[in-house]
Length: 538
Image (cartoon, rainbow, N blue to C red; front, side, top):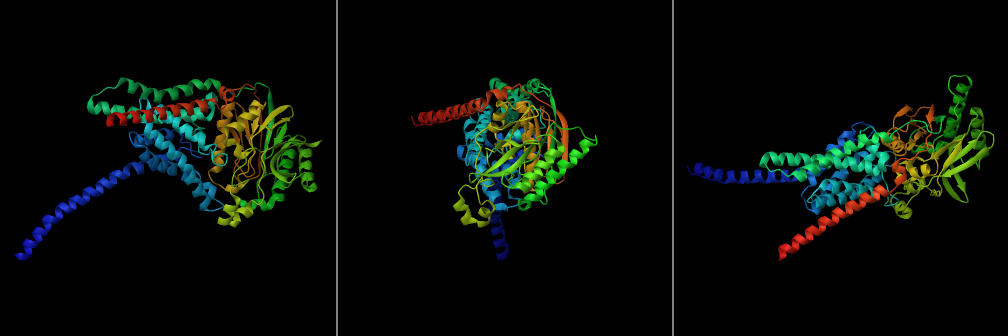
């Protein structure tokens, strides 16, 4: 009997303890829900990016992000924003560690996610304002603007606009460039969340808030209606006649960083593919191009200093009989340049363009001594920094004005626009993606070129050493493309255009306006919070 009584007493004491423990675990799990939702919404945003064509997932991604942040304090917004950034950027930028290991990839993501965290803090602060989706979307674009400029001249990879090449919002690129396109997508996402929230609130309480509901519905609907209205700005009609362009993809001996040790082979491959194309032209199988575009790094042997490289290029140019834009690595006055060289079949090199937006940790090493202390192999791979060009590059090729935007430059608004305002009737984006093997990087970059085509209403040719090379019409549609790690060439008649879209004419102005809107909303929210605290103290 004594044992039974003791057992019953212990059972009575254990039951409330067990219930208390269960409630404690439940509370902990509930607190984890926003963190999990923040990371999940970032992952959802990643899935909306190429090579997938699920562009529309960006809208629910920001709707979920809005649910996570609305009504929270700035500290919570900071942490949740960082988790959103990790969920988005970790998978998006995994290609940066393909050849050099996870260290640089993780470091890059950790730094870039800080910008997203700051945006998250700002969104949480403005989420208490009337019309908060507008302020919040503007804050996102302000974060992208900062990320495109600092540190080390910025890293705009992952701009929302670059995930919309297949989407209904794409025509907005012609209105105000990547800032307006990205703003519309983010506004639509936050507007979706606010519309659903107000609908559920009305259903639960019967309360109707007409002004807030109208703003929410406008945030959801105006971007879509604006995108359809902007379609009138998208055209592939030839304004200055047409040209037949050839984009040559010679391929490389092997993927990865080792391709650099096979520089002569890469040059020979591109010359051989051009000579094969010339034979097809001579036999009548392919139309004769008016000019040929080679990729970035198609001649890493300086043809100005090495007669053998010059002879190889000269033979290829004479075989095809038209000008070639050659991607070379050139040393001049002790400085290295990533250079495009206009090579005439009769005169040889007649013009050059030096890449202006060079890639940190790829073409030059910031903090070289610190990086060398961490890993000497990284400094060995980049023994000499490349120097920057200073002038836009527009080659006159058989009468057509071709703007040069070398690889990484396509991610930056100013580099592309400068070529168009300097008279480019079409754009070439010579690239070298062999370092990144078969990763998603190639498709992410190709999507950028599609957005740029619509933004400036220009044909864009993308010759790449190892693929994917493509011809893109001014409406953003790809008409031809190659595979990866194959030798191939694309020949097509394309339109030349000289009119300027509103995005070209306005330049950075739409981005400045959106940054000012973000600053105004943030200032309003901070001021309102300070006034509220003072009133409480009284």
